[in-house]
Image 1 (cartoon, rainbow over the protein chains, first blue to last red):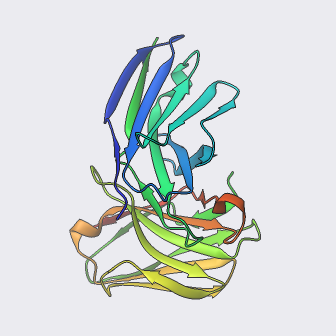
Image 2 (image 1 turned 120 degrees about the vertical axis):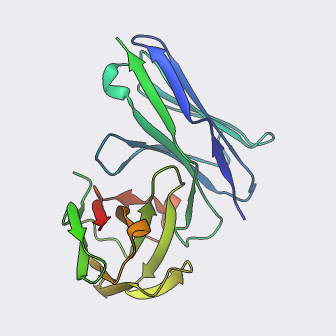
Length: 112
Length: 114
């Protein structure tokens, strides 16, 4: 089955760029997602990328997909204290079962 | 506001109690899900409903009983739970069959079993 791995913790200074990395095992994942979870809240969809794309940019967010290495990254430009949260990457297997496989989540700490 | 509403947001129950979690989606989606988020573990898919029919039960113990009366509502009935069932229970919905099948989550229900 699909495995999704993330580093557990990242600390950056306000104004710096953050890069959160994710690796996955199932090359049939058709869509890959980034979700954000703030303390005490549910998961907020940030962005997603289709497997035939290499990059997707949305304001301060840039998603890079390296299909050969099965590596996904989320870059947050000009990181703000409000970006402090847990970030989850998730893959969805081919088909439309809605079965998302999540990584463990990366806690992003932004220091003023 | 994601369009997926969960109640209650917080629930404390004893091991012999029966309670229910409720989820309602206002997005016109046809698929609904229950996920469990425990400390230090990846999110776990529990149940999937497509067009009110359960299409996946991810080996969930029978003390968790889902109910989907229509495409907009999903319940999780809880009975004789264990302390290790304490977790954040997340409901989600999607429009299965569409581009990306993007899944939207509710805020979650924090469950504490004492």
